[in-house]
Image 1 (cartoon, rainbow, N blue to C red):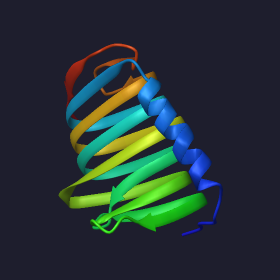
Image 2 (spheres, rainbow, N blue to C red):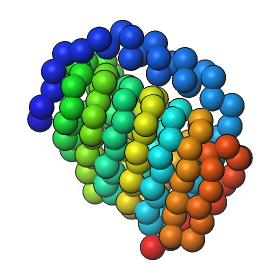
Image 3 (cartoon, rainbow, N blue to C red):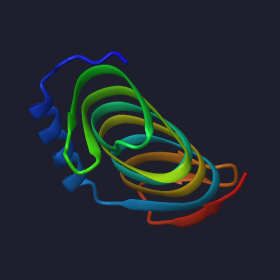
Image 4 (spheres, one colour):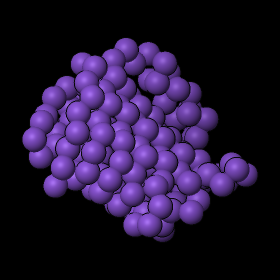
Length: 145
């Protein structure tokens, strides 16, 4: 794991501004694979694996197998979660239990495989095996392998 200190407060403020200014949302439910790219907020609750990238903040449950690469800071929140500030790439493996990940930032790249739910808010694009679309619309859909 490569992790360095950076201006975490500025990133936190920028990510929170993105989260509060994003006007549209998409909810994706199912089994299979989801890829997405954009700016805003993503909340993932899944069992399986995820590769996440971008600039911003992320909150991850400590029990998940997490590998982080990039520049930033990891802060234990004291409630079983970790705050990752300024991440570059996060790989999460959670084969047995569902894991919750909350991400806010810019230039987000998400690839989630397995079973779960994704909530996307902001501006971007998403794709599953059957459907693709923009984050700029409200939508609930199921995807399967």
